[in-house]
Image (cartoon, rainbow, N blue to C red):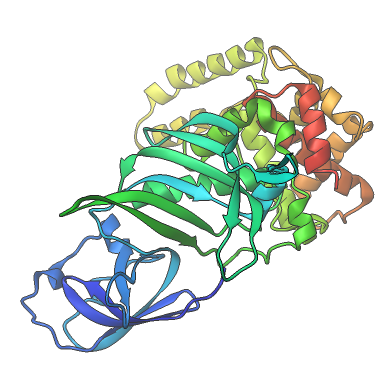
Length: 455
């Protein structure tokens, strides 16, 4: 993200406080001694509003407002009535903020990976030796998205942008844009979640979390004395843990929308559910960058294997047989009827804890083999795995030992070709399960993963 430096006044508890903003840190200078009777100083609990600070850039006659979102809100001690300063890291802010009365109804995203995803096509035609530029929107996809009880609509669009000013040579270029329309709102938490949905979607299809998405335009209106006035703000998101962006040729090499178009709406909905804490997918195995993807990282091994275990629990049918489950339930009932009900106090508490943790155990390797071979209502993932890992049964045992060694730091194993292949196989299984959940066929998944994982 391009760094900005701002100075001016912040508005806190109806007071103007000098501020300085640099390196995504907001510095507030409480210079005046305030009244001890100020009710704001008696505040003992925090709300969502406490994460926001409105500031205005110095020297602006109109506009120049920013809404800053704090990682950690100001405490009651920092609102004390004596001169002091406070600093907070900003994780996102809105440029050209119009106030709480503003209502936004659309977000627009433009970033390099999106251009590779829906690359522009020629919008030029010839008519009687005249060059004609097509300025209409080319809608590649249009579908609904449901987030936090709100019905939204997503569009993937190519359009042409023209420059025919007298002071410059005429020019035209194609722009790729993702738009999300929704009912008018001033819920900034919802807007930030929409940003995260898009971010997670492209993290997934790029298999790296350092995509170039950092801003989104917010479109809406605000009521004035002369009626509704159109407005445009910009959401800037700062991720201090994000790896530097890739070079242009890498970003342009994003998988084409053509591979994902059949169920892209369902895939994006999975990402929306994931960001609402109600989802079944896991994105912990996404690499930080292309360079880190080429690195065999022990911590990443844990992320990949834990993601697989989550997906097995959330997506795959129960692995245990009905007979096994019934046996465990009968044993639990015996303990409860013959012991728990006969004892009291701490013994009963311990016995109940034993019953709670008395669950059928399936080894990690068995989960992998079941996912690949198929069972009950789960169709085999073998067609997606066997062309890349024909020794998948051996690798299932290898990853079982490796996971236990790394998770418990036994230090008995060292990375080998088999271990690396085993981790890569689990990564492929994770992607396959998520894509199958979205509705893609096995044939489609093979083509998609060849583009996402094998380069």
